[in-house]
Length: 138
Image (spheres, rainbow, N blue to C red):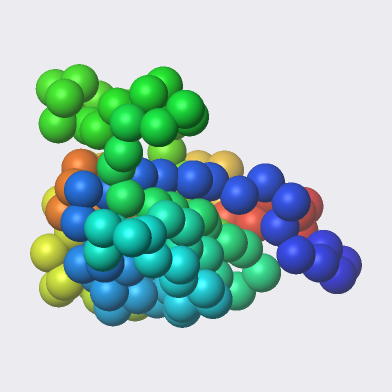
């Protein structure tokens, strides 16, 4: 089944967006698609891609939409959602992320519904879920 590009794209804000772009690419395997800087040296908008999916991000700022967002450390490390990314080799992805310093919050394991997965936090505390289960394949 050819699903084409993702039409649901998670958007995150980071205090040090430039550093997080590099970290997300190194630790999770994302690739830079576009990075647009603002006039203060921050990131106005960035697009990172992974296989057929995309993540958009920018620097934390108190603009119109940003005033509705909070960083995990302000919420005691809690989030109301997380990005879920399907990966081909979940074990290798887990090892790569762990070696890069991702905080593992749900250890790698085979799942009863199929595939394997793990959960982690990036250096700014955002939650991520990576797994080999592909809900589109079923």
